[in-house]
Amino acid sequence: MSNSQIEKRLEMLETAEQEYKTLKEMLTDALANDSELVELDEKLKEAKRRFQAQKEAVMNEPDNRKMQEKMKDAAIEIKDTKKLLADELIAYFLESKSFDYVDGKGRKRHIAVSAKFSRGGDDE
Image (tube, rainbow, N blue to C red; front, side):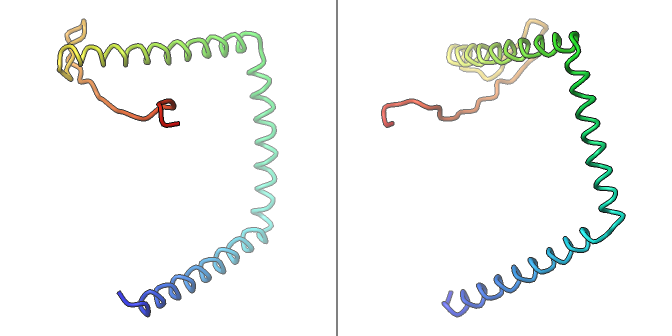
């Protein structure tokens, strides 16, 4: 590919980007200058403020605070259990050399494997 073709594409790209920017500004101005839209936006903001205040009031009720704490505990338990299960499935695979597992209810399940790097190692 020649430099002239590259320069032509760069010029075309700059022209298209400038046109896009101009059109975006024009559309933003049109939206900002529509009085009905501005009024509706203000009503929406007020409704969101009222919604948030009411939500906080409901969430701060004693029974709901207890539920939140129980949910946090359950989420931690789920996370820990998933980690243990993953470790056990790796051990099962290494021992059986099979990606298939039949659970206690007779359902055949397939072990999905994924890998990622974690912090640690000697090269840091």
